[in-house]
Amino acid sequence: MAASLRLLVRRLARLSHRSITSAAANVSWRSGCCLCPSSSRCLSDAAEDRSTHFGFETVSEAEKAKRVYKVFENVAQKYDIMNDAMSLGVHRLWKDMLLHAMHPQPGARLLDVAGGTGDISFRFLDYVYYQQERQKRRATGSSQSLSWQDISDKYPDEDRPQESRAVVCDINKEMLKVGKQRAESMGIISGVSWVVGDAEELPFDDDQFDIYTIAFGIRNVTHINQALQEAFRVLKPGGRFMCLEFSKVTNPILASLYDAYSFQVIPVLGEVIAGDWKSYQYLVESIRKFPDQEEFKGMIEDAGFCCVQYFNFTGGVVALHSGFKL
Image (cartoon, rainbow, N blue to C red; front, side, top):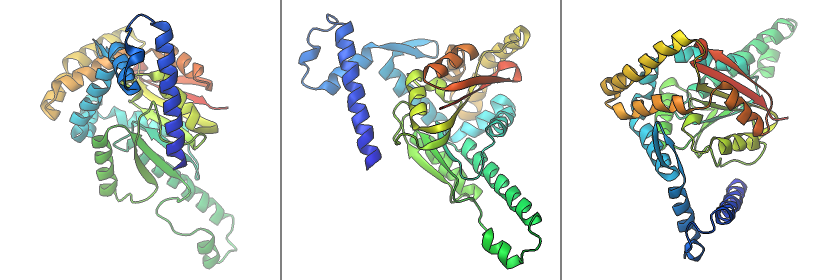
């Protein structure tokens, strides 16, 4: 309840701020706006007027949000299969490298945004469980004088570390549905929660999470700066922001091959495997519209994060950006 009330207050404040800013900057853009019977109608009209990109198209912000939702609604059931096909399975290595860089310990609380199918969260739980088991073995090895009953009482047998949790937050219900189905098929019944939420307006209180991840999702957000500010808000002091995203290839020869593969092969794979050419054409185009490594690093720093750095994977096809809330 407290989280919902705080979210409502933030939303009202943000909408009020946008209304004032829009009126001040565009006094004559629509003389009747201040007389609208509904403030939500005015704000909706403003969103329709503001433009952004959807791939290589220029569309209104409201239209982009609808289209992006539709893209992931369409590809949800084939999302994991297409990831394997498009990256030749390399996406699994990228995600593993994210977890090794994260190196979470038992007790960590993760928020995985735009993580509907659960890939990062499942890896997180496995990694934390492995770390906990290592700690148990070390403690057991240094306590050989204890009886088995003492050891059993001290380290209860659990499938998952109860103190560690992953929260998957995704705006798309179909993606979350797929994630839940995967969790059930893998026998994961605890340690993970599923929440419908917008990266630009997260439904969580301040200072709640130790780690925030977003993998291959932030380029689909309409207001990236706002999503970064929300990430900063929900992290605890000392918390870590980690973003895995397609980026700019640094090698000219690799860049040429990558472009040819992206525009000539990936949409075809989308049509053959998922029956959806247009969605994968958009996903390829959205990569080219995303800021390069240095520009995105600056955006993360502007949101308040410290010690921001990035690591290129596969020649810059993908970059891992990391920063801390200090």
